[in-house]
Length: 115
Length: 117
Image (tube, rainbow over all chains, first blue to last red; front, top):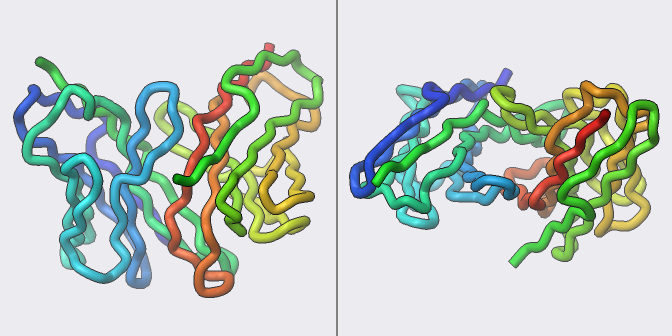
């Protein structure tokens, strides 16, 4: 069965320092993986997606993620945090279930950015 | 840009009421989804639809039903609301690529925060 685990429920960084949000997945076949961001009182916005092309995926707002099959990881990074990056981030795997592809969400990582 | 619109941002209802949550998308997407979001649990799929008048149960369908009479509109119905259905409800839509199998990203509305008293 497919699953995704976000290793940190909360991450706190200072503005201008790097961001690392960790995600491990479990999939019995080559997965499609996504990162979404949710700002307070808003819906989820797609940051980036991996679909078996390049292992390093670039997304919006300076975020990128690297697919590492040997480690079953898909960690999200950004070189320099901005105050506007404070939000909740979800790692998501696309899974076959009953003949359809559905999205399976991690529990989320809340990112706090301090001045 | 894709626009997924949920009819209410905040809703307060009483136990036992029948509650309707409406969602409309403007991108001609085949797929539509309803999720609920609770702290520490992430998003859980309630129901989804891959075509007009077609519906499939997700992971937590109990106490809910759905209706998809038109391609752009997907309604979630709480048949008899209970306090444990107090939650944030998110609607999403996506294209269907490659027939039934799709890894298209889903596009989300801003959510409806529902309180059942």
